Length: 114
Length: 115
Image (cartoon, rainbow over all chains, first blue to last red; front, side, top):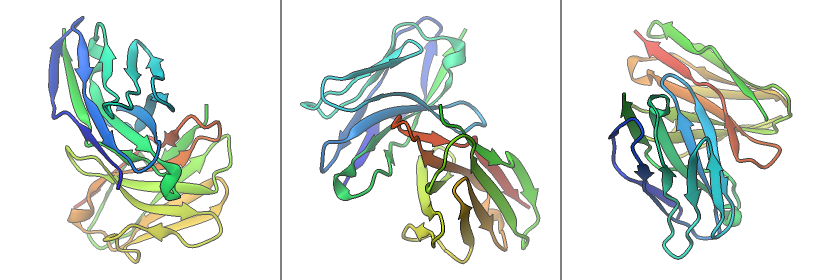
């Protein structure tokens, strides 16, 4: 079956530090990959996506590259801000099993200090 | 982009009562919506798939008689937590597939507290 594994959190950084949140996946088919962000007390928002190998999704300074050879989709940002503090979810959608319903990782909490 | 509106954002209810949560697609039609439950420090657990005009499809282990789902129109799905108990306290989130193929759009969530 499909699964998504994210690094354990929380990740605590100082403002302007470099961020990496690791994500690896297993899938039976050829999935699309997503990163969602959840700010405190809110629902999830799509941050970025990639639909095929070597695609790079990017948004708001965040980026992630679809690596088929390592089955990874690590999230990076060169300089984090306090406002980036949130929970980040890696997810995949693999229609090969007949459903587009996404599979989520456990989420990684990011805390950015001034 | 596509917007999903969820209401209420917070609700506190007494044990034994029922609570209804609404999920609306504001600028698109959603024949299918999804209901998730989020536990503290854990990921989203898919509870059920809501299908317009037909019965919902529940995931294994989810009590369909406790979590009633109705998808009466192409823009509205409701989740009713019946005879709520404190262990039902959680964050519930609805979702629909973005018609532009940009992934899934989520509601803002409902924090349910049963006292």
